[in-house]
Structure formats: structure tokens, C-alpha cells
Image 1 (cartoon, rainbow, N blue to C red):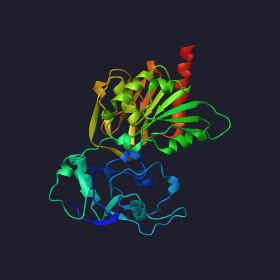
Image 2: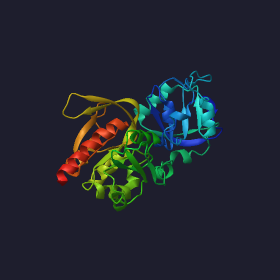
Image 3: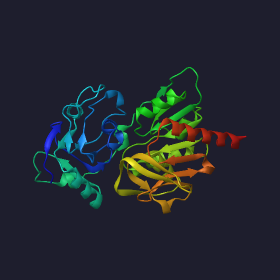
Image 4: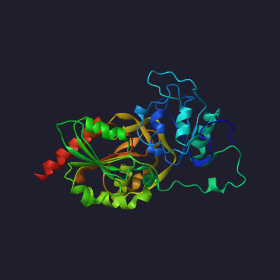
Length: 338
């Protein structure tokens, strides 16, 4: 039990307790659908000092609770619109501050992710906490509508994004670089994706357990080899599943910045931002070659499927990275077709 002071929404919520190591970027964290069903503890002691800026939202808030050492009641930034307390209230998210987040993080690090409740009084019946599981995360966070994004008159290529809870940031960035972007619901069939006439498919990141998404994974398997495919986060895991690999749950996941992803076969290490609780089990990979490994726990961070003109990464990427990889895949695919 950790005692603290309430802020945010006046309610009680159960969630899966994790910690995030971000020093900045709490706005992006709070609006990231990948935190669905989780209570997030911030390791950085002071949160909210530049307030809330709605232009920086990357999606719809989905976390169940928020834990900080202290929150800034008087933020200072020329872009600030309101404080973090109002944001949490507006979105029905309970928060607690005045907590020893260092000790809390040590407990999660040593004992693994565990269920928790933010409450005013300890419940006499803890079964709701003990039995809590995150289910239907993608169904509750991903858009079910098809949408198109075109920023300019000249279109370089047509990209399809299969949306498992993707953030609007990547879609906007790709459109801003001159690509026609068609965003599709996660349950779109492979034949419908191929009928769009897009030059490549991007599988977005998303929340929850990939084992719940076996039907989507099977459809992804039908795409691989027929069109260039690039997977991110949950998309990376579903591609591996489509090729027969197994998924494991990490003790406390990778949540936050400064996550080292070593490029296999080189001396290069990427410093990445990540948000996932599951990973591809390395010794279960039947097809593909591991391209990136985590520098801390040696888990799989990327896989290349050369024969299928596909690759995937576990970490967050920007539009430039996607474009670089996708254009290379498209070139290889077109050369092979000739």
C-alpha cells in the first residue's frame, strides 16, 4: 500500500501497474492508446511543468490511472492551455501524487508487472484486483472507420496503414511527406487491402496481448510476399505470429525513452522510445532474421523477412524511418517483379 493525495478524476480504477522512464513527453504518454488498461507510474519525479497542449495529443487517452511523485500546479509554457489535473478529470482518469515512485519502481522492476487499484479505502474484497486482465485492447482503442489523408497535390506513393490503435501523428507525418495514406480498421481482410492498389502496407502499433489478434495475424500472413509490409510494435508481433513465432510477456515491459536497440551485425545501437509488455520469443522464430536486439534484456527488437519483402521493429519510429524502410522494400519488390 502506498499512501498519497488524490488528483484527477474522483473515481476508483483497477489496472495493470507499470512504470515509464520518460523524462519529458508526458502529454504523448497520456494520449497514447497503447497504455490501455494500465496504471502508469512516472519515474521522473516532477510531472506537468509545461502543462497540457492539445496540439501534441497523439490519440485518445486510454490508461486507467496515473501515479507521480509530484505534479506541477502552476505550469509555465507559452503553449500551455491548462494543467494536468484538469486533463485527468476531463478524461475520467484517477491520479495519485506524493507517492515514493522510486520505491514503487523498484518493486515492479524486481517483482514484475502487477495489478493495482487507485482508491480512497482499501477494498475488503480484492478479487477485482487479483483477477484483472487487460482484454479487447485493440477493439476498444483502434478506429473502426476507414480514412484517407493527402496533404499535397503531388502524391509520391499510396500507403495503407492497418490501424491497431495507431496514433494520428504518423499518419499526418506521412501525408505531410507527400504520401497518400489510407487508414484501415484492424480487421480488414487481406484481399480488401490488396484491392486498394496501395504500393505498401504499414502495420501500426497497438495495445494489449497480441494473442487476442490471431485472426488479424492470419490476414497479415496472406499479405506478406504479395506487397511490401512494414510492422511497428504490435504490428511487429503479429507479423512474427503469422510466420509461426511465439509471443512472451515481459516481466515489466519496455515503457519509456532511452531504450537501446542494437543493430545486429554492427556496432550501432539505436536509442529508442518503446511502449510494450510483450515480445517475440527469439528461439521460436521459424522465418525471418533478427535485425535488432534490446541492449538490456536481449529481447527481439526487429525482424527482416527478405523473401517476403517485409520487416518489422518493436520500437516507435517517425515518418522518416518508415519512408526509408518502405521505399527500400518497394524497390526490392518491384525489381523482383521485373
